[in-house]
Amino acid sequence: MSDAATMDGLPAGGKGVIADFSADKQSFHVPWGKAMMWIFLLSDTFIFSCFLVGYMHVRIAATDPWPLPSEVFALSFGGDPIPLILIAIMTFILITSSGTMALAVNMGYRKDKKKTFWLMVATALLGASFVGMQAFEWTKLIVDEGVRPWANPMGAAQFGSSFFMITGFHGMHVSAGVIYLLVVANRVRTGFYERRGDNYEIVEIAGLYWHFVDLVWVFIFAFFYLW
Amino acid sequence: MAQEGQQHPLGIYFKIWILLFVLSFFSYMVDYLNFQGATRWTLILLFMFLKAGFIIAIFMHMRWERLGLKLAILVPPVFIGVLIWLMAIEGNHTELTRFEFFGESTMVPQEVHH
Image (tube, one colour):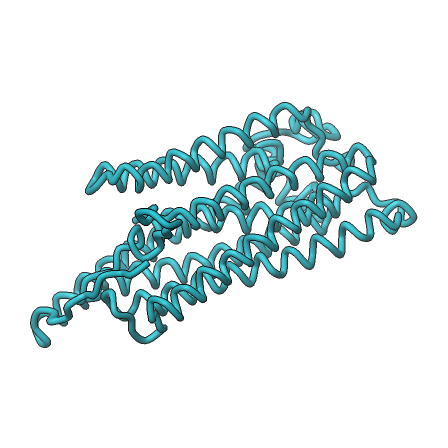
């Protein structure tokens, strides 16, 4: 539905808001699953915001110097260490997966089961590789650099607790997303939604979750790694 | 009812996809080219909001939703600004109090080894 103004003769704009919310039955003219996913994502936005604001607070309040993320997350491939290189690769992987997900949603609405399935599988694989790189990053930080949630040799102790909390919670979201995508992809493949007479909107709802995970990473990348 | 779902030409997804790559590359360059101070923070925030905006508007289809849903989802996060403002004040106060009672930091940070 690209033209909201003409939808079912409902008014658009400000009058549309009043008409939607003063209705006796339904405010959001989308499938219920989609509305619920948006509301869940809104609550998740507040959770991640609380983490990031908490991180901002401890970083402002710390009297020890804050470790430089650019140096801490640099990686050497034999030569001079390249700043933040692994994080940059992880960012590109997540964006790639967002693109394949967007295409999967589109193919779903075109009822192209095969393409939808493979694009979702590709998205899940990219997500899994992101988690794998994160595991590598954590291992390097814990084993080689000696970063702990309560202390680290490079500066303020709060660095470790913020890092493990924020990236850990995000990584958990990615892992859950990989499982979620694979379950939905398999149901697309077996024709579960077709038999139920669904319009593949479930693919779009799963896509909303996946794009949100990418969205959160945009903020983590900016505030934790670049700032 | 909008049960037909969100159907749009593929071209827009590819354009936004490329744009997100370019913006990510720019934000990485902010660190790589070692911008500092106000320039760094402005660039970080600029690229961050552009990326977030395109993901929400196009990939999550928010641009094509009705205003009622847009307001319900996009307005509440605005109030996080109040929390950020309060916690920034609180953080500065905590830091000042620590300096006042515990003095300057005596920690000698170690080099990162790669």
